[in-house]
Structure formats: C-alpha cells, structure tokens
Length: 253
View (cartoon, rainbow, N blue to C red):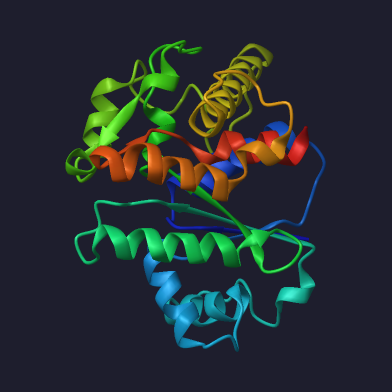
C-alpha cells in the first residue's frame, strides 16, 4: 500500500489520479491525503515532535482537525512506500530566504527514501509549474525561470503564459470515459512533460539538456542544491520545474 501526501486539496490529487490511471493500470489501494498547508508548516510540526513522530502521526492529527478519518487506525509501517509532494514557495513572506532554504534542506534530508520516512518531491516554484509551457513538446522549456518577486503572482503568470486554456490536455475528469484518441493524447502529453522536466532537471544539475544516464544525478536534493546555488542565491529566481513528471520517471522506468 502506498501513501501519497499532497500540499493542496484539489490540483495535486487530481493530477495524481490521472497519473494513476495512465501508469497504474491495475486496481490498487493507494491512499491519498492532503496536508492542506505548505512544507514550512510541516517542518514546524515535525520539529515540535522532537523526533518522536512521523509523517503519518502528523497527518492523522491534521486530518482529525478537519474531521477526516482517512488514516484512522493506520501507522507508517502499514505503507510500503510514502511519497510527499510540496511546493518550494520561496515567496513565503513569513520566512527569510535563508530560513526557507535551511528548512527545505532539512526536509529533503529527512524525507529521502520512500520505504523509510518517505520521499519528498518539490515543485519549483509551485504546482502551477505544470501549466508553464507552450504547445507540447516545448523545446524552450529548459530556459524558463521566474523571479522570487513574481512568484506571488505565479498562478496568473502561468495561466497567461500557457498555450492551454485549462488542464484538460493532461487531466481526466472524474468519472470520465475517454475515447481512445483522447486517452492517447493525454498519455502523449504526459510523456512530453516527463521528458521535458527530466531533461531540465538534468540541465539544472549537470548542464546537459538530455535524459540522464542515471536517476541519481537528478535526485531531489541535487535539484534543490543546484537551484539554490545557480538561481536562488545568484539572482533570487528559480528554474521552473514540476515534480510529478520526475516522480513518474523515477518510479516506473
């Protein structure tokens, strides 16, 4: 059984459900939970436990506040794998840039193995990076960056920049029974996104805009360190990157 933890309540779970439909063709009992807050709040709550808690215990408390009983009676050992998907969100005005990077580094170090504490995947700057593309495949994707100043308005910026008016090109609707043509079109678009984001991750970390020879070269900590030293600390920007396609690449290939 796999546990998938998302920052948001709608967009991330919906994107994952399409990924599940495309790449997990067999029935499964994967469990989806939404934390409902950012990675820095999760960091604070993990620190307050002083090493005595884990992601499942933190989630159970958070869900109970919303009268959500998804994880009732469950513990970390019930899951073979745990994956977390959160945003970098370095426009956060409650923290300094140094605090943001310190906390993100610690969270990536803690959540670095899906069969243990869990594995964290990070969107730069946020989940809306999945929309920041021209018609797929977008050959210029590896060049796209955004400043910290503009991140507070990134949802609008991504919406206006995108070739697509909605996410229908990569998203199945609930209960949808797509035609074979539509199914294959969505599948092909995800294959484009996988190649674009994986190549860009390799470009960020290794200066090669191509598929990496080894997955380890684009691990989440390597991506974060490259973002920090090549973009964030240089001119307070990040290379736009989405973690969902990278997750598919690492998990299935």
